[in-house]
Image (cartoon, rainbow, N blue to C red):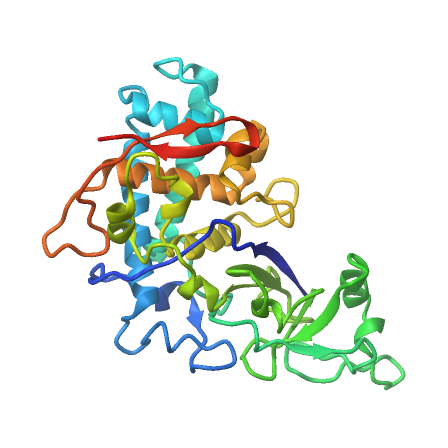
Length: 365
């Protein structure tokens, strides 16, 4: 069974164009990327054979940004600008050198970024990947591969075979205990089958499925458990990027965003499009539930992210996105050839306004 998790609103999550790759890194190591240009396929945005295209550019940009952030957060005690940024987005008071309790919180945040960096770097220890790809992570570029199924439709297992009860009768979706439970969690949820157009034979349970990308969403992370599948008991994570994540009005990359900034520019307006993929990957790495990242009630608006309680900030992926963006514009460097990762003018940002009207405005360099 499966549920659509973490719908990503149009408010502030995003994507890009880059003009080089990181040697040895491939998006194919991280995800099984759906092929084709329809039915959730990503061929328009990623050439799997050549390992090139917009999604490859996003991958490069994300690795650059995460590397910078991890290194800069390590300078917390020495850098007042880093301390101010962490106070804004994670509520850690800037009292100079970190106290013991503050150090624990800082290390937790660094750990989040380090895990994301290890994932996108496809880091290996002793030749063994930290995040191996065992048929358990998929990347789609539309939600239209999901096919609606009525509750009285015969239920299928992970081999796409009809489920039969002890008396030899075909069991419907609504009569499978796990499926019925998933449908009951939200009275508007419906079943969506992914096995007709993809290799993943399972169900998503959500009010929206195949039509999700017809709305304002940029992307989402969905977890699917294939019924009776013996080798993947922890399920399959699927990131779905909607067409709007590639076409929304955010900057294509950090270089382009940097060129748009002037004094007073709101940080939320220059988050690059690649942030959508990073946002969803944070969901994959952290899961949901009481100890995972927020789902359903997550926050996107920058004022709400700034004003949220500390405990909420730590579980809200967009707070991490805003911190990455802030530090990259502050400390990124110009590069030969002016690729999408190049920063030609460094900008710091500060809170402007009050309450729900707060923004993070750029300061004159």
